[in-house]
Image 1 (cartoon, rainbow, N blue to C red):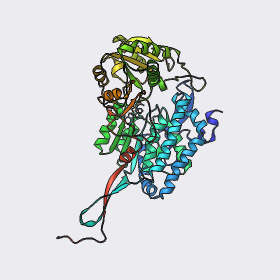
Image 2 (tube, rainbow, N blue to C red):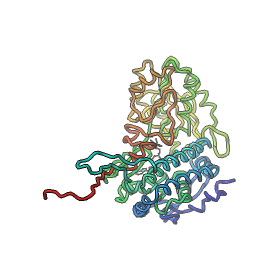
Image 3 (cartoon, helix red, strand yellow):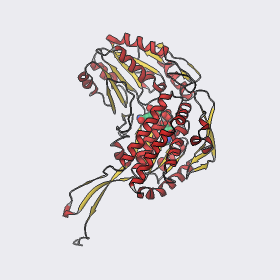
Image 4 (spheres, rainbow, N blue to C red):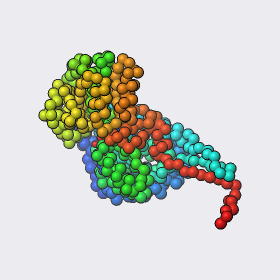
Length: 489
Ligand code: NAD
C-alpha cells in the first residue's frame, strides 16, 4: 500500500493548503521531495508572513473558549489523539520514512514518543496547578499557573514529529492555543500529521494553526503581538535571531538549539560496548540529531582498539533508501546539507585530521565516516556537523578529557563510559550539560523528562515533564476576601 492510499493521510486533504482556520488554499504551494529519491512526495501550501498574522489572530480569538472547556473534555482530546496515532501507525511510518529519509525504527521512535507526549499532556490537565500561600489579613492567597495565551512553535526537519508535538501538546494542555511552523522540508511529519490527528480527536477549530513556511514566517511570529511565547527548536544561528526578536517584543522564548556532544571513553571501559555506543551515537539518523555524539574522546590506552572497531562498523553499515531496502543509514535531508557535511570533512582533513573510513557520497547518501587525529581548531571538532561523521580525539589524563570536553560553546548531552560509575560521575560533574548519560551514548529522550541544553545549546529552557509547567504557563497571584476593606484614603 502506498502512503497516498491511506484515507486518513490522503494527500488531497492538504494539497496546496495551509491548516489556517481549517484546511484552506494557500496563495503559493510547494512540492515536497523525498530525500532518498528526489521524487515528489506531496504538495503543500506555503505560508506568507500575512498568513502568520492571520493565524495568530485566530488562535488568540479561540483561546478563551478552549481553556473554558471542561477539563475532562480537554484531556479526552489528547487521549483520543494518542489512540489515533496508534491506529494509523502503518501509514504514518511510511510518511516519516519517506519525508525525513529515516529508517523505520526511527519513525517508530517518533510515533512512540508522540503517543507518550499526548498521554503526558492529558495527565497534565488534572495535575495541581497552584500553591496556597500565607497572606496578610487572613485572606485566601494562592499562586496559580495560567496559560500565556498563544504559543508559537517553530520546529526543524530532523525529528519533526517529536520536536513539534513536544511543544504543541503541552502548550495546548496548559490552556494555550498554538501556531505551529514546521520546517518547509518536512511539513507533513512536522505539521500536518499533528493537525490531522488533533482535528479528528476533536480539538476545536482555530486552537491549532499549521503554517509550513520559511524564516520570514517564523520572524513574523516572533514579532506578532497576539503571540505571547515562542518555543523554538533549530540551529544556534537561527535561535540567536529568534531570541533577539522575541526579546525585543518581550515574549517568553524557549530555545532548544544545536549540540556538539561528547562521549568520553575511559581507559577501564569495555572496548566492544564503547565502540558500539560510539557508532550508534554518531550514525543514528545519519548524525542528524541535536544529541548526536559529535566528538568521541577516547583514552590513548584503548584508542587504537576503539578506532579499529569504529572503522569496521563504518565500513559495513549499509546505506540506502530506507523505504525500499533494509539499511542502517538513509539519506541526508538535502544536497545542501550533504555539501555542508562534505565541506566540513574535507576542511578537517586539510587541517590535519586522518580519514579512516567513509568521506564520500552518492546522491544524498553519505557514507559513515571516521576521522582520527582530530584536534581543537579543526572544523569537525569545533562545529556541529549534522552528518554521519565520528570524530575521534585521544587523551591521556582525566584533566585533559575534561578540558577537551569543555572546549565547546555547546552543552546539550554528555556520555561517559567507564567500569567505575563513581569515577564517571566525578568526571561528568566537571562538564556542564543539560543531559548526562553514565555508561551510555548521548542520544536519548523520553516523554516525561525535562529535555534541553546549556550555553549555545539553549537558553536554559526545557521541554517535558515538570518543565512543561515552567515553559507553557506563568504564575498569577490571586487573593480573595469576603468583602472589600476600608483604607485610610
Ligand atoms: P534551522 O535553524 O535552520 O531551522 C529550524 C526552524 O527554524 C525551521 O522551521 C526554519 O524554517 C526556522 N527558521 C530558520 N531561521 C529562522 C529565523 N531567522 N527566524 C525564525 N525561524 C527561523 O535548523 P535546521 O538546520 O533545520 O535544524 C537542525 C538544527 O536544529 C541543528 O542545529 C540541531 O542541533 C538543532 N536541533 C536542536 C534540538 C534540541 O532540542 N536542542 C533538536 C533537534 C534539532
